[in-house]
Image 1 (cartoon, protein in one colour):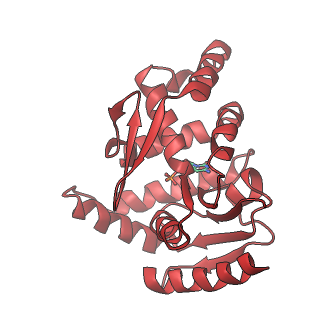
Image 2 (image 1 turned 30 degrees about the horizontal axis):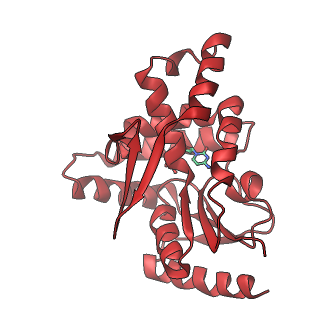
Length: 229
Ligand code: DC
């Protein structure tokens, strides 16, 4: 039997992370947060002063080696996942806007994306996997039984992000966040390698006007049908 795979792709702030975690819990499947891999690699390359020099051949070679050998651990707790990089707890720092920027830079480099492919495939274990990212359906798991593309307007994603940051006690200006989101969307959609776009056979959901529970309901209905085929 092949492992059942549910992919959820879409831009940041669409609610993917929350919904992927809820789906994984519902089906008791493993969870791949592929964005976290890009964030971890971005952080690691920033710390080693390589991030800004990826256009140098030797630096890129060295960065590919780092990507292949990244020492990462995801530790599942009841309601959250702790993330360790080289044994250090980076759960919070990888979620910052700054590290999101590093990740976006890393994600635009084909050699670095290629270096993370095997690691992503390794998450596909029985009984199944929910894979959250940008190119899960179009590139990493093209044979997934369930492909979902979750999107939302840039404005609604910005206002969710501001609330989230305020909830963490951080100050945030909606205009700055919106500009960041628009710049990152543009970079993610226009890059030549694995650009952000729905797979041809993806089920597309726009969550701008929907609650998490409403989106979850749509996803479960669709996934149940597809998984039963
Ligand atoms: O989903 P996220 O915000 O954690 O992703 C961080 C960055 O990594 C974002 O710029 C998009 C990129 N990314 C990607 O290119 N491919 C993926 N499968 C996941 C994330």
